[in-house]
Image 1 (cartoon, helix red, strand yellow):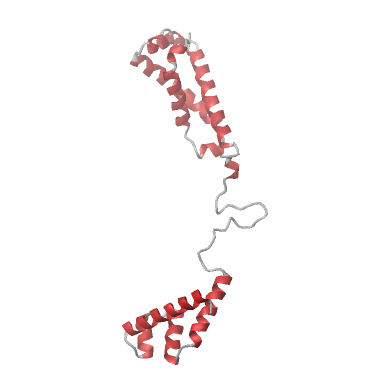
Image 2 (cartoon, rainbow, N blue to C red):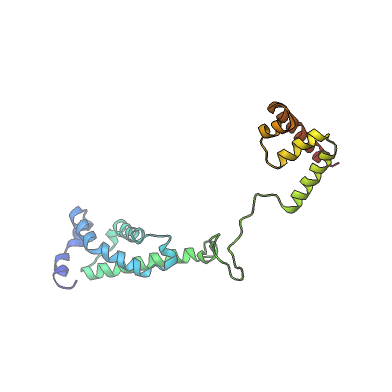
Length: 198
């Protein structure tokens, strides 16, 4: 970068500062790939999964464009040194944000990851009833069941075993609609029994 590109840089940044679009494009063409490389070297693995190198490089370039009137770079090497330092600082700042207590990436755990001291990952709470909920429901079912005649008991048992209303109706000799009404009444009786606590 010292030889011919140093000579081609003469006045390029000054022209860019005056708003010369071609000068900015030439600076971008020469500097942007180098800034990308700096960012890639600085990003650690956890950050690579969250950020793209181009995001940091673009941010550095935007900062240069926004504040270009404050700078004076005599050659390409001084501009590159500034851009490399700015890119490194942006990566460091983002790393600090991520590792603050609030956003600490080391505290982020995949639900299926193995945890220290455990052979399986974190268990997601089940929507299935707990053993105590199952026991309470079973007791309520028993109370309702004891009050039924033989046919209604058969209907309730078959429904509990997962038979369809059509299969139950064939077994007990009722119409499908009659089985549906009986199951609704049994469900209502069970719910009122649960609410009353008897």
